Length: 87
Image (tube, rainbow, N blue to C red; front, side, top):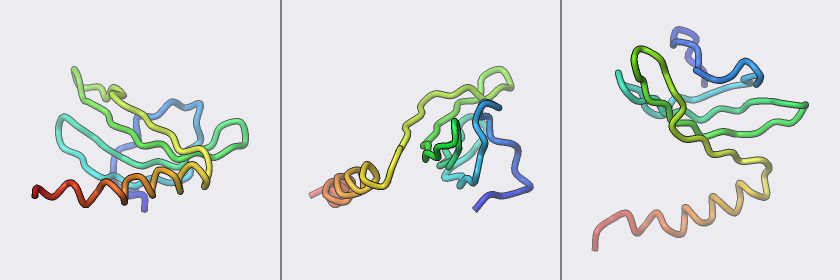
């Protein structure tokens, strides 16, 4: 869940952040999963920011728009994940 003591996510004020989970953060990189709302629709965004000149800049963003899409992504990752281990 969100950590209230952590600095505010560097996401556009256009989006209403519902909740977030930081996956990794150090002085240069910040990776988080964010559920946000825009135009009355919720999406899950997977974000990667890089800190440059004391400012967080978005490097990558990947959205999941609905449960059907999530199921396809989850199945693909579960199929490929065992191949992370070297043979």
